[in-house]
Amino acid sequence: MRRFLTGPAVLVLVITMSATACGKSKKSSSTATTAGAKGAQTFNIQLDGKSASYNGAFTAFFPNTFSAHPGDTLDFAVPRANEPHTVALGTLVDAGVNKVDALGPTASPVDQETSKELLNLPDVFPHNLPKGPPDANQSAGQPCYLATGVPPLSLTGSAPACPKVTQPDFDGTQSFYNSGLLMNDGDSFKVKLSPNIKAGTYKLMCMIHRGAMTASFTVAPASQSIPSPAEVTTAGKKQFDDIDAQLKTTADQAAAATGTTVSAGSADQKIFNAVVAQFGPKEVTVPVGGTVTWNMILFHSISFGYTPADVGVFTKSADGSIHLAPKAGAPSNINVPDRAFIFPPPSPDPINIDAGSYDGTGTKSTGVVGSLPPAVISMKMKFTKAGTYTYECLFHRDMTGTVKVT
Image 1 (spheres, rainbow, N blue to C red):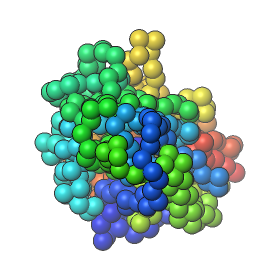
Image 2: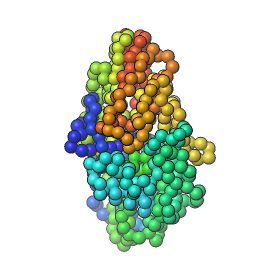
Image 3: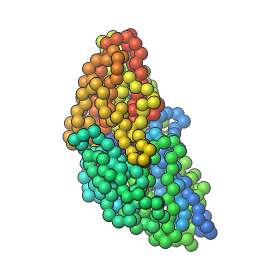
Image 4: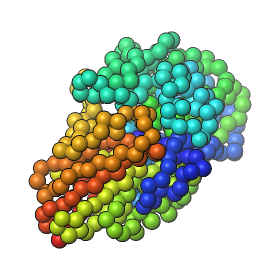
């Protein structure tokens, strides 16, 4: 989900909990140029990705800066949907990204999300608890193309969808131009730049990861030389490979952890747009009556009695509406404080969850919660019967762990 890592108090998050706040990747792009194109071109931009050596989630555009000409097409593709994403543009997004940049990399989620600029941008997730069952904001979860005005907003979720219209070319003047949810491997969103779009810089933001997943692109006059589509693809691959290689050290350390205290996710303060989506250690052994403690890093669930088929925080109905999956979103047989489900955290106090005991019968789940320091979340659970128990994170695929009770 949202990625917030920064600040001088932050330590490398591997086995022990540490402070995280908000941040984003450093800008980089290819410097090579080619002759101005004599026809429309398509530029391929990657969202997320798959590491060959660990289970990671990469909340970034690859590359996060590039150029195009009027009439070109931007093809945003998700080869591996480790987390859901959207691609949003428009004047409201320009203002939101500019605000995030002005606040700086050490700003807190509260600083970002309480600004008027980000309050004008719908989140797919609700930020506050509603009176009834929580649900997604359709104005962010479904495609939305507004020429003017602000999309339907709700901090408690269930905002209605925008009026359904045929996707127009992006001319740079629309207030909100959003893909809707991209949550499956291979999902993509194509943006045709209007032949009349003005030269200038335009911003991108994900309506799930918010200020932690932004990018920009420059529209250059048709006569101006810019990097070719192949060079842009190469620049994106290099950005991804660099982040992947940097985060591998954190992943290796998490995998090598021992003991009965488990890190649910791990991260590095220097890498603002990726997290290791693994439990570390992945396997824990305790005697009957023993207790395991989990320290949570960012957004995950700890869920016993589920299967990989239950993983997924959103569902899509036949009418195109997006909904929160009840299994992922709701706690099961664990008393989780309401404030664990509020974003940004309403209090800086840590949240310590006592999940009671488990004998392998039925389900136990925190639901997907956000551990955003200083409001960090930890959970402990006692195991009362010998056996081998597998558990899942219902937000991240392939994020599983095992508790052996002897």
